[in-house]
Image (cartoon, rainbow, N blue to C red; front, side, top):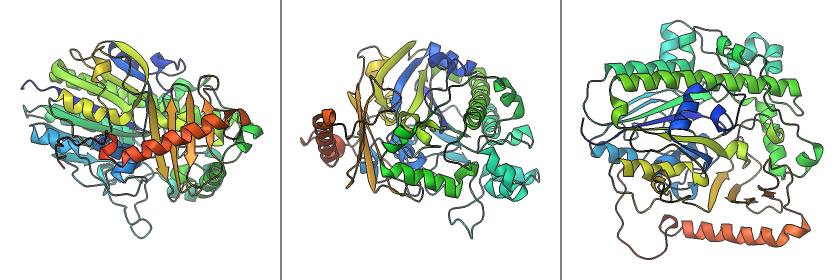
Length: 486
């Protein structure tokens, strides 16, 4: 192989930040991720640019915030930009699993794609115009197995489905679970590969996104686990902007992703959800270990950068919510670990970074120029120990879609202490003191003592938005721009 490092990007779907044992979650069983975190650089305050899959992934693979990519919801079309740069530079670019490109089966700059999408995605074309059969669907069909979904589960046992609140231990063949299938597929492909070209491999696990469906033997590991469970109060719920009530109502009405959500879920129900979710993560942790062993056996890890992260989090009952679509940390903050035998030192960094900052980081690792349009910033100053951080604040954006119907547009800004969420055209918003109230339980938006701070932060949001309209957030000074390769 030539001198360019192999780059392995492993992403889960909907994995919140507090899901790795070594990074402050002692109830979690994640030995592989614990080792990667101990031997690599772990960023503990990584924020996504959008609390939905496609908006977040588009930012990561285009290096810009949603206001620049134009991708705010899960239905906007998009394709990656910088993967093509890697391909043009001689990398063999392969995706195995979830990427959530729109359309789902677009090549996106990759030489090969073995795509698998949502676990609960409908297949009926007359019901869902984007439905299509992916690699997992084909494998299930070959085994003559019926794909579990909200349709099959509800039809079989309506009352049991409602009481499950999204928790369904896997009942089919173990290797036909989507996360097992992706992990096995990646190992198979690595063992079969013959090319000497440097490798860019993106592996996308569909879990722990709901339905919360671990194999029973993984769920057994959490049978008695005492996982922290939220207890939202009436005062906290009342202080939330109206958008939150509309979101909860939609989740209750439409049971997205097989989660029959409810107001006032009991402690027992929330603990059951969290145990299933944790078991899903542990199952993925095992598969990451198998992938790492396959990479090592083939010599890929001798010169490689391995990255583990997720596209957004999951409320799991925090603040009365399930899944994402809010600007709470449980939705926006994700794990981020970079590991390498030669390129990255063991380090834990608590500074603010954005998930999309991986874009210039990967390009620079490959020795490639970073497009001038990027709003993302390279992590290498931190990785090399030259700086403690690269950002003083982070941002996220979200627009109205078929699930988040209560707000036309919302934008979040967070600095070392304060987080603000502004709702376009609305009198209500959110303001939290992340130093004294890290759980975001006391909304200070209407607190008279914080009105001046609120107005100052709203002004900063406006200025940020305007800067984003000029050269992708860069200073408005003319400079040579390199075209982005699509």
